[in-house]
Length: 483
Ligand code: C2O
Ligand code: CU
Image 1 (cartoon, rainbow, N blue to C red):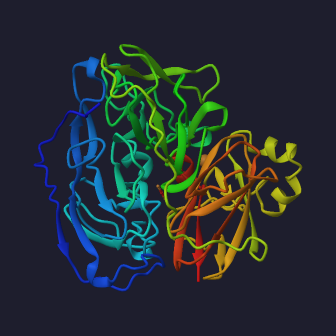
Image 2 (image 1 turned 60 degrees about the vertical axis):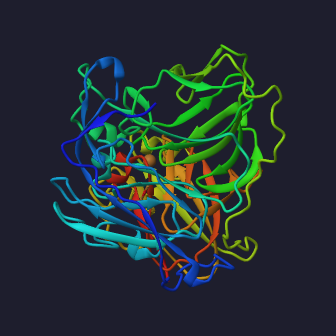
Image 3 (image 1 turned 30 degrees about the vertical axis):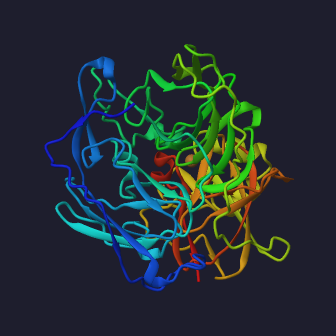
């Protein structure tokens, strides 16, 4: 499950720890840690063309774009409360940025071209530096032409360790990706075509775990694994079935959640979403158990086999506690929150769905049925965005609680992501959610209404967009201003 990657660039990663004075923390939290104690962890990242052995049986490498010559890029592993300093040296022939997906950081470090920084030109460098208030599973990727840059392999995991982690035998990260490859294992060069943009995005034909098509994942009976799942695909959703195993979700999008079995036994991950699961290896010595992706009807496929070794690690399933301590998130006051409405529309069959939902009138007022605003195909409150410099969809009063009621008036799924904050998902189609999970990306089903709640405590202009990268590029992007 490792990726074999060769690149003509010398890997330039260096990691060391220094004690450093801290700048004033822009975010609440980190109680009990005085500025002088905060450690700064330094890394270099070098996005550049490279080669990766995505499909081992193809017997040849695929030309990719990669961080430090590897797909995924290096796992940046740091402790909660530390500072991260990453120097990005752009070896691509085009501009790039790095966005730290899910991290509650100061706006200037958010990696959005033009909006929060000048894009990093070819041969140029940029230094990102920020504190890490929350533990959990996060990831990084470019925000410049991300439908192609991420689609060619630019992404990596950012793991922030808890001060008091739950006890496990093995901590494993699976970064899932989905590639559209030719028969000779080359990346199909049809990024951003109109069909992908107006339908369900660039869904590919080759799914990788950590940069290669897997066959088996060796496990031992009785073993307890914390599996950190990250969906780095442009557009593919996953619904993972672990067979007779009984996975329990302990965190979503990095944030701890009441440990629970996934609904219907399937761990669902829209693009950009993460789930940390506890997986107890309850299979028989020498057996193989398939992990199957069942998201798309009639298109199930085997992702990988859990391959049991002959000697169990232990005979009993461990009974160690699995609940994680919460991160220092401000709790929204839902009863007293300011309320806002957001409607997503457009895409193939978009007009039909508006009609079916009885929203044509609203659609007309927003200009969506006839003369739509913008050249794009997808709309947030009637506007299809171009670029990153945008009039805000919403302006939220800083420090206040807000509820945003979002309506997916389209025929497609959309993973909706807000930068700079985590939000509680409080209801779906009017029914309260069981776990009020914190997320930074919420997957909305066609015609679904979802309410999210959060305290707008992080000032700035924050991207608010669909993480199907083709939808994002075709207009499904906005800015939420916290002021
Ligand atoms: Cu994962 Cu706007 O990003
Ligand atoms: Cu979308």
